[in-house]
Length: 178
Image 1 (cartoon, rainbow, N blue to C red):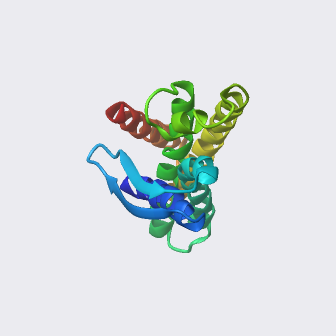
Image 2: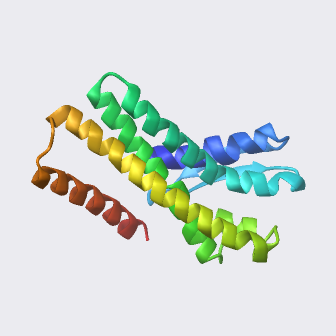
């Protein structure tokens, strides 16, 4: 979603660069939901600024999962859960695929070009996969629970239909994106 890309670019790259003594000039989001932030930072902080986009979207996603459960209104809770799921589907998968296919100008490919690739890459692969699985599980659970708050307890068929529907939305999103 646009919200997840904005979190990644602004809260992640932009604010981190500014906080570490660099500059944040602007960001943009294209129609295909690819985004970028125009930043500069001291050389010793480049790895941190590159990693900050994925970290920001993942942390904001986790916080929104918790918040989605604690807000009183079921519609607001559902909206927060959907944005949380969007953030969880933005950061960790981006880190995982960009680490597997580390060519190009993606954040992780650029990060790997600045560090000891042989030692960092396996850690990035394992951690991004673990966070992807956990984030997906908990974000989808938050969406599911808030749907039940609105609709009442779902039958087995209703729960399966909701699960299949959420899976299709995510799959379609990845298919359209790639």
